[in-house]
Length: 90
Image 1 (cartoon, helix red, strand yellow):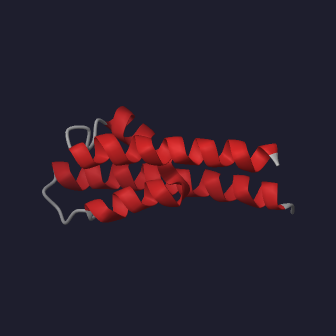
Image 2 (cartoon, one colour):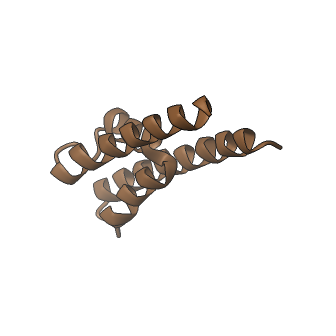
């Protein structure tokens, strides 16, 4: 596998993990269960799951009223897009 293929596989997996984690947290919020820490949700965005986190926010309507998420998740997404554009342009 090339570095490009490894990166793509990693990004697909981490974005699925991020989306599912947002879904689990939404479920736990509705059922008054122990929640996923906000730092974990934001960290998932910055380690590559920004698209999954953003889609989790938008599709599931989860954490959309929290300023940290409204700013940091889109910021992580933009940074990843810029980084990937730079990486693939090499």
